[in-house]
Image (cartoon, rainbow, N blue to C red; front, side):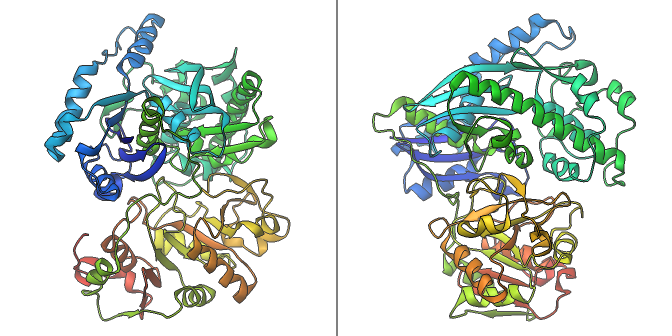
Amino acid sequence: MLSLGIQYGSHDTSASLVRDGEIIAVMEQERFNHKKHTYDFPSDAIRYCLEEGKIGFEDLDYIAYVGNAEVTNKHKQAFIKMGLNEAFIPKMSDRDDIEKTLRQFLLKISPASAQVPLYSVDHHKAHAASTFFVSPFKEAAIFTVDGMGNWVTTTMGMGRNGKIESLLEIPHPHSLGLVYGAVTQYLGFRADSDESKVMGLASYGKPRFLNDFREIVQYRDGSIWMDLNYFTVHKMPLMKEPGVLNLWYSEAFIERFGPPRQPESELTPLYMDIAQSVQAILEERCFELLNDLYAKTKCDNLCLAGGVALNSTMNGKIIDHTPFKNVFIVPAANDGGLSLGAALQCNADNSKSFEQVPIIHAYYGSSHSDEEIEKELENLPDAIEITRPADLIEQTAQMLHQFDIVGWYQGRMEFGPRALGNRSILANPTRAETKDIVNKKVKFRENFRPFAPMIPKEFVHDYFDAVQEMPFMLKIVQVSKGMNTVIPAVTHVDNTARVQTVTIDQNEKIYRLLHAMKALNGVPVLLNTSFNIRGDTIVRSPYDAINCFLKTGMNSLVIGPYMLRKHNSNIYSWKTEKAFAGSSV
């Protein structure tokens, strides 16, 4: 059975194609339109999925979309009865209207879409399905936690025998994700986007406001309670319009903690301490909920999803702070993975041939042929040297050994917000200044933000206090004693790292490259960051990759079988539109 999953109507729109539980394609719309966390309908992502599957709409059994009017209305009605704010009465959802709008979008892609049945999957059920059905577990406790979806903020469940059972729902407005988002705004960043910056900043601070947050965000009777005096999320919609957020913290929050930070202004110890304090309360409350979940399920296996499940600092501590022994997190734990969950849940509910197929990698996105790459190479400036090395891996390792910063574009792209070795910027982590160089001259981002290491799985215990393999770069662990001086560019200020382990089955080229580095300098570790600059999305096409390469401080680009190298290290200061006039593939 073929299901096309669609996430639309909110941020991080995407599409996925699944056949009887096996993933064929996953793609986020932002990769096409270069709008981070886009709200645009995923027309391009849908077209890609169908092309990758070599099918048309007429071949589909279902189109599964994320959203459930009945679930939403149940919780909206409960919210209204709470009487939190008489001035804010949320409008009830209408399934017919939702599906009429969806049909209109789909008809613009193909008239054949009109004949495909629609299937509704509520937000948190899609999160749960996106992680459990691709996990290595036949049975697992499931924890989904985010800002809010279908007016639910957190769920607990149990997956077994191809089914997901709901055990608990925490309704809006009590939300750990919204608390973290409100503090993200207070710190001068953008909620629903920059929470990872708060997580990185937290390592520089002290939890001196933890007791304040313990009063404001409490664990009560197996659920979460927020003192809503400090927030506005119950007084108005979370957004003024798509992509434009209201302010989620109140004047009372400012009175207690002081004036909010203005964007791009100095990050003082006050803001670092607030970041550390909200990180600490998030961990405490999640661990309390997870301990409850274990008590309900008595299962050693745990699957996580939802935007909060991207909090790698928390994820790395789960085994030490709860009874769970095995933890799986889907690469697109954020809303970009909802289309996958919808397609999987639709398969599970309607296909007699459905099977759980564990994933070992995340490379289900688009790729481009050598011919498409060659077309884009035709218009490069003379200052760029183009070669086709006989041994691409060895030549790349030599450049990295010499501390070149290398763009790496190979195979099918990853799904989810983390670059996992096919759309990556790579660097040698053995010099501390590499971190600052990549932040300043390549990514153009804040200097406090850390970078992740990638390492062959068999060497992970030599460098990190890791208890499990971490193929999707979603857990932060301690760097082993003495190794911080060996790999300083990927060791954060608190001696931690967000590790990606690699096997030859997951990514043969990266695995071989890491071993080539070990042969050259004795260290099988590379700095890995997403192939993009601050504010842009991860590159999708050869044009995107070359464009990014030309206007940044990267020294080299390895794209398909080709290697590009700049003669002038200051080429990134050129005006890209003058230097490169390729077409978008």
